[in-house]
Length: 230
Image (cartoon, rainbow, N blue to C red):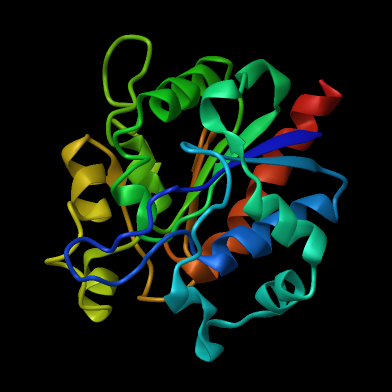
C-alpha cells in the first residue's frame, strides 16, 4: 500500500515576519495511522529537501500522542528533512495521496502546477485524494476532465472562516479556504470550531481542522482497502 503525502515548501506567514509551514499534528497523526496499518509512505514537497514545520504547531498546547511520537522518531524526522521533489512523482506509483495542512499550502500548493496536475491525475484514476485543514487550498485550481472545478457539486470541508478569525489571520492569508471552496461550487459544511468534522464524497476526503486529521486517514484507509481487494 503505497501512499503519497504532499507537504508545503512555504515558510513565510505573509508579511508578518513570522514563519509558517506544515502543521505537525496533521502530518503525524495520519502518517502513523497509515503506517501502523501497513502503508509505505513517500513524502514530497514542491522544492524537495527539508519541509518547514509551522512553529505554532510545535508549542506545548498543540501536542498530541502523534506529535510526541514524531518528536521521538528520528527516522521520520529524517524523512521530513529530505522530502522528495514533487516534480519527480508519478501518480501510477501510488494508491492514494494525502495533503496535510498548515498555512503554507495557501501560498505554494494552491498555485503549484505540478501539484494541480498530480491531483487531477489521481482523480482521473479514481484514487482516493485526502486533504485536511488548510490543505484543501491545493484544490483551488484543480479541474475535472471537463474543465469544471474538482470540488464543484461535492461535499467538502476545510479550515473555516470562524477558525481563521479565531487565530487572527483572516487579513494575513491570501484567501480563505471556506470562501474558495464555496466559490468553486463546493457544497461546504463545517462542524463546531476545532471539533472533528470529516466529509467523503466519492474519492474526495476532506477534514476541517487539526482535530480531524486522524479521521481523514482512517477514512482514506476505508476507501483504499476495497480498491485493493477488487
